[in-house]
Image (cartoon, rainbow, N blue to C red):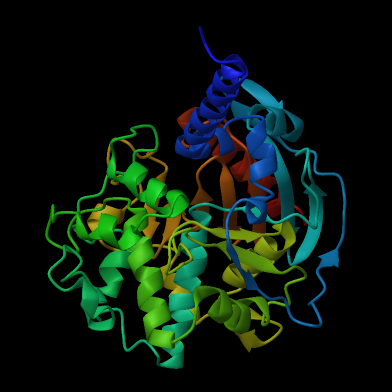
Length: 403
């Protein structure tokens, strides 16, 4: 016979074991859960509740955006029929949407359940384009000598790794030659190991050290968040500042941001921001960044990002980065330059992009900036991207046609 109370003890033990197993499962699958609909509408506006963060402080006196709201009756053709912006928002799970024309905020809406002008949105790889802006500023400041600096000259602990050789220019153009598969669905891919290191307390540096060389630096486009991670580390080493502090001083204050932004940090120590994917900011402050890029890096007569750096971000003559030349897994309407995606057409428009549908679309010739944040159910979706590009092109064409 069992001693009295054993049944209750065994049941309690089983319950504890079940809770522990459930907690372990949640820990292992936290990334999948956080990015799945409909939960991602909450997580993409509440990353500060999930991860450690570093604040990008706003200035005491924000630079007001000129508001000139008016109807934006735009239609676009996709999949054989005419669609409206309301169709776009429904089909592509828009959470925030803003349009600047000639420096004025002409349209703004927040279809997301947790979205508002005050919300800070997880930008994923749109962060890379902001990192590029900071690199351009650092070069102008003289704290970075030039784009021909090697990564290892600033990060000597990378000596002997595959990142011993690529230059800042190679990193900016996603042409380091380091083998890295940006596959968000494969749990065995290098990206999955990187993600687990970020969220699970592991070592990002250890993941980086494990990567082999696949091509001569500067010769092949291979989209890699680790290239941008190294670029962010180079920037921190050169400036002696964290990404958050440097972004606050050299971008958020000069553009007159109205909200603090923040980078989420790795759980493992030493904690680090992700130069390729952890910035969270408001839609309006993203629009301010886009306006800065549309105006050649200047606002109200103040040159914030060097004009030549903005032009470099609009395209390059390197053939492997041309629109349509990035490979079979990349939509043919994109090229790449300087941590920005270039788009086909004589206007030389360009955009920052983040997985799950984040866009900062800049058309300097039309003086149009469009911000779109989204909560796609999957990281990459060529169909939703094609529809979004069709819609954003239509917005630009509509506003360009205004007298």
